[in-house]
Image (cartoon, rainbow, N blue to C red; front, top):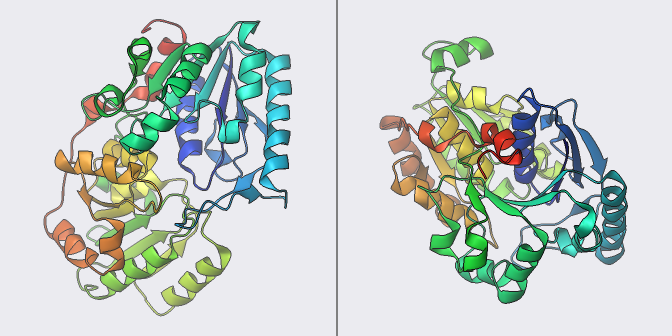
Length: 386
């Protein structure tokens, strides 16, 4: 079965990591799936299965800022010509390759509508189209406007055969929060969070990483890391005030953190013997399992990994222009699975008592029933759970 997976690239690792989890679920199934990615992502491609091909679209960059996204081509192209070129490349590839299944992540028409020509021109060529959604999209007004208005919902109706939602319905259902029209509801399948339960004990994780027994370890990561420097400074300030409560902090900046900020962070760490900095950690879940406390961004991918590991965590919704992370994190906090500290509180210094409480009264969440979505994908694509 030929499977093409589209995801736009954006400014973080989240959609790449989400797509990679689905790809591994298919690649590891023992069934014959031929996987191709269609994306502009330029970080995190090592997360994909080694046998997966990637049709690389020219990348764009944007920035989560109150003044606007400032989208531009990474190769010094204006946004308009860049997305026209990406649209042509996507249409040519999909027309010639003729996949049996096309998975479109998050954006029903692709970034800046770049998939619309291909989805329209190849609709009669056979093959299934599946829209994949992380669960919480945006606030209700924006989501209803962009996905479930009459025009948006009819587009999904006409161009997609199914909607796969990568969360568990006990936590979040599209139908309960958004104005999903009736004619789309029977196409929705909730996979559960994509990850499986991470069956590595704290002691085994520490042995694998060489972390000493009894060492009080905090690990922190903000996903891709773009624009995270104010948050990192506030977090380090808070930790400095209680540095008798831990022995080491391992801070993973993310590969999208701006180069100047990354250098400034390393300079600051040079005077703090308990702080170590790394830009990227492919074994992040092992470090999460080894830690006494994990502090992380509240993106959907990271939240799913926290649930999989069952680690003691404080999560920070760090989006400036969108509320998705805050909504999702609050749902999990209400279930006692995470602690949440919102971005304004972190930047104002109010995170210190939250960290102290998390170290003093660690959470030990159990959520195995919410997981396993990637493992279900082969059956979903084969129609066994349709």
